[in-house]
Image: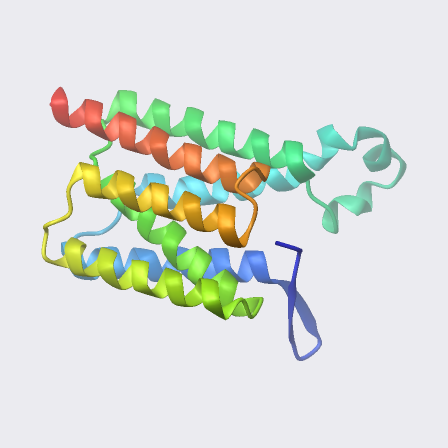
Length: 199
């Protein structure tokens, strides 16, 4: 999917960032509403860690450009390798959190909720309405099962695979960002499973 932007008055914002912030807040709200409990701090910390590493990795991936013009950091990010570094940083952080205080399998469900809503909003912002309809159906099904407490480990894996399938159809699954998010979801699922098997 090509980079798209949203114009609000005099401001031009990345559709990707708008979708990420909106889904971050909305998924946390829905999680709290359905589970009657606040989502873990790891959720917010992971998101802001990703942003910080992705942004400031520009100093590493484009060292010479940054040294010649430090102000360029305000306008650019780390690009593809910045995304890789950000995802790896989040994975390391989550593993550290898991070792100190094991993350429940619910972490995977909250991640899935974020990712589905993110894809829904992003497709809507870039006017990819066919993909948005598919994401809306997936979201409705996920929320129904989650609210009824009928969702299982196997079903969550299926949701993750369906999202991967949609990415391969409407976007590019092989893209670093998309593939990284899918892998991060599976990582969360694995450490959640290990926690539940070894309480």
